[in-house]
Image 1 (spheres, helix red, strand yellow):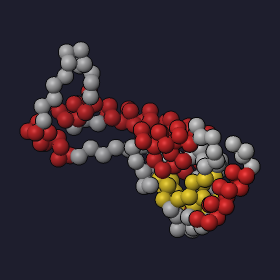
Image 2: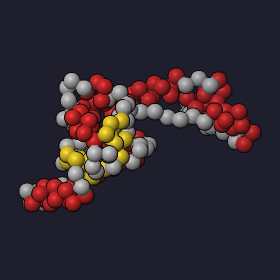
Image 3: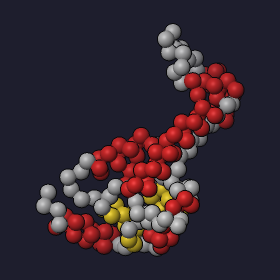
Image 4: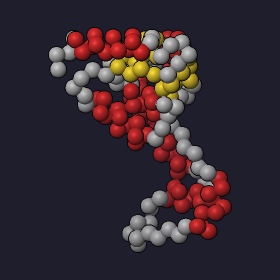
Length: 169
């Protein structure tokens, strides 16, 4: 995957963390949400030298056109006791201000960085740069600790079989 929404990636990650069988990830492109969801695999195998891995970080896209037309098409009604609901979105619609979104993104990003550093054997010399959002081809991703090996689908299947043979569950 080229990325995705943090909730979906976290749900996949949770399933991998709670597994009772080994998991080997085989990837052509594991970026952002792809890395978040699979970082706890026994092994991440890059699908050949042209596989791309990285894009560690958090972002969101706000469609500029929406601000100018939202009120023409939608009316939002909130309960009297829900004055803070969707506050960042409402402020953005009204003023274009994105700071409240940035605060949330920074908090999510901090968690992502901490958990990636804990789950993957990142190269200490390049860890800060690795976690800054770049994408690398397989050999560089392996040198940085984002993938464990580079190989074919058959290689990944054999690695999974090896883990399964050593895991009686």
